[in-house]
Length: 155
Image (cartoon, rainbow, N blue to C red; front, top):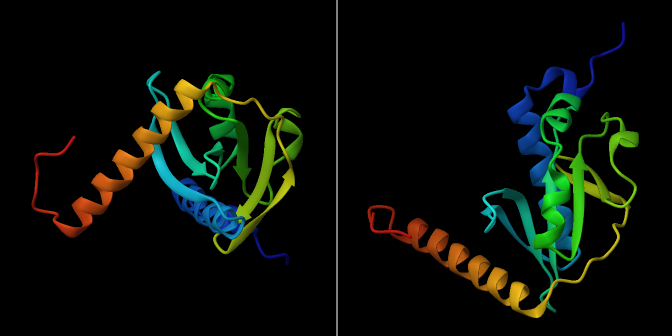
């Protein structure tokens, strides 16, 4: 009898967490800094925002299952907030569902691989600056909360 796949044994939140962790590891190995769950000015939330040393912004949306993919078809909205857009999926995800103009990462809890680079859409300088400031403020607040979890007057 064949053993069930890792995805079949895992719950959707566990799969999401594993893909996110492996993707973050991959991005850090590529020299990018990552910030999880960044709220964007249009109300959407990026699962992962990655920032290069030159200030290039990459959004990675994590999809743990076909159902997760089908309920969130507003992915083109993310293109307005990054230079590059990737989807990160588990190994057994049907990759043909991911649009060809979007990058593709396959990951598990231990790492990942970029299977396809996305088309690049450079942001306007003013939007890039505003997003970089948002990222810096959020990262700073998260670090402050870690250092002083009892402080409640947060942004």
